[in-house]
Image (tube, rainbow, N blue to C red; front, top):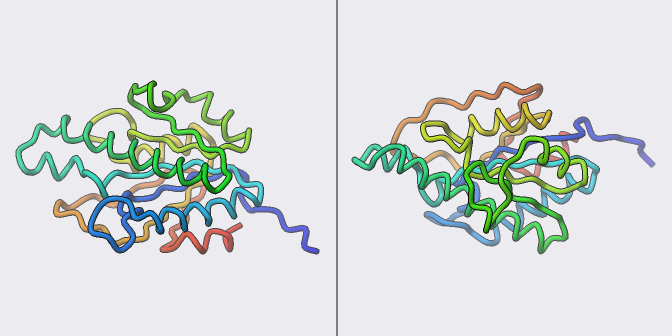
Length: 196
């Protein structure tokens, strides 16, 4: 029997919202999210603490709204709400898989999800709960890639970036910049277990 230990104790997985679309044109493809959660469960069952930041581009992309005349801050807040919806869908699928997940939002909607409180997130992770950080940074003009970097640094995680779908945004976006300890890019979550 192998005495192999995971290479990382705590990771942050950054998913684009488009990852939830599967082969659909928009929204959340249930089969896709179930498959993703099964793969995350494999990693959690290895003893790895998992945090997730997910975008909202499958529902609404703030920069696209801003490019067609909508107030950019308003459009960005709508995008933040899309990330909350994606995080809730992810947490629901995790619950059905037997995982305990906490959605923590950078904007106050306490009737729906917990507020993001920096000391509380690592506590949830240490308790074996998956933490989905929603609503980006809580500030307009910042992407969920920025939020992933901030959450990774504050939760002391290694960062894995996984995108299953090519970016189809009509507005050019700068390449994401990751600042935490380890950055690995995978085209499929199914390769996660080979990293650990």
